Length: 343
Ligand SMILES: Nc1ncnc2c1ncn2[C@@H]1O[C@H](COP(=O)(O)OP(=O)(O)OP(=O)(O)O)[C@@H](O)[C@H]1O
Image 1: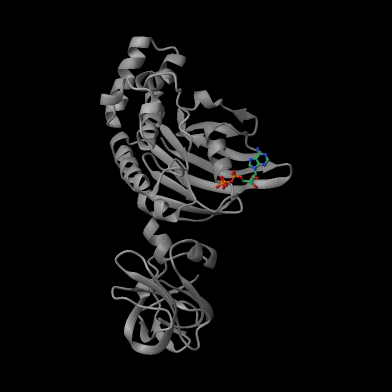
Image 2: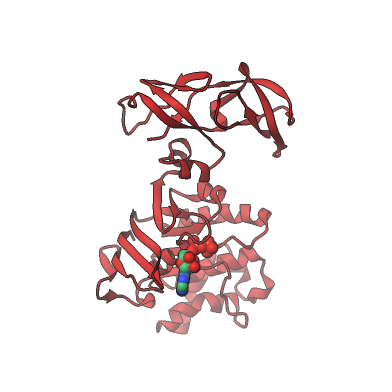
């Protein structure tokens, strides 16, 4: 089921929480909304679920308008499932009854609801735990019960609000894999909210970077990383230096370096010559054989080292990655392979 959002606005007490959001989310997409605390992510999700009313704009699920001027379809009539951080399972019911509950509440017979629930428990690989109570499951397993319940309720779109936020890092990694697997198996359109960019990059078909109630950029994880549209997005995604530069046709001068400007597949014409700003990622920096530099910091990050290299003439240090140990204060040489000129 596709989700279309047009010029959506929502304020609370005069303060805009959603300030003109447009999105066309395709059927079966895993669409991640990424942004800092308070930028409006949960409000957007609640608007799609029908838990809040829109002030302006339109929302449609498939070709059916559900929110707009004078229109508000009730949450239970939207075929949208919501999974929150707290799993909201009934503690006194078995896993099977929890999953069967939405269908029963919608008037299905107990037998039919339980049959559907068993099938959904198989989808999330929990059929063997159908008779347990939620208290006897791990956090990750409870999360999967909540997912199964969404599907059993006939959800064609699943909305997830930081579902992994209170899991330990080890379980988080496993759950990411399981969510990806769940998505592949169920094929439901998924809109997933997080402030964790690593999680967003791992799961998304596309990511919307959100700030102050707006989408700053909507793109694939790789495009966001390689070709951010603005300094704000560049700094929010991965490690980056954003530096003053001078565009000169196909190349760009950055302090003492002259390097190729990374190509923009959307626009083959060279950038207009003149001053600009470039984004340099660790992958653009080679250690050894170039300009003299000094490491202002260095940290071990499991398998490799990350540091910041100061080079005379640059407006900020370059992010570097090294396979061999590096330490703060060390003198070395760095070369630049290329840089992304901000539009
Ligand atoms: N019911 C409400 N009444 C008043 N203000 C609200 C309400 N819900 C949200 N807000 C405000 O709207 C803005 C966006 O909140 P929202 O919860 O959507 O952000 P978020 O990006 O989900 O944040 P977080 O990551 O911390 O959950 C915030 O300034 C918040 O205080």
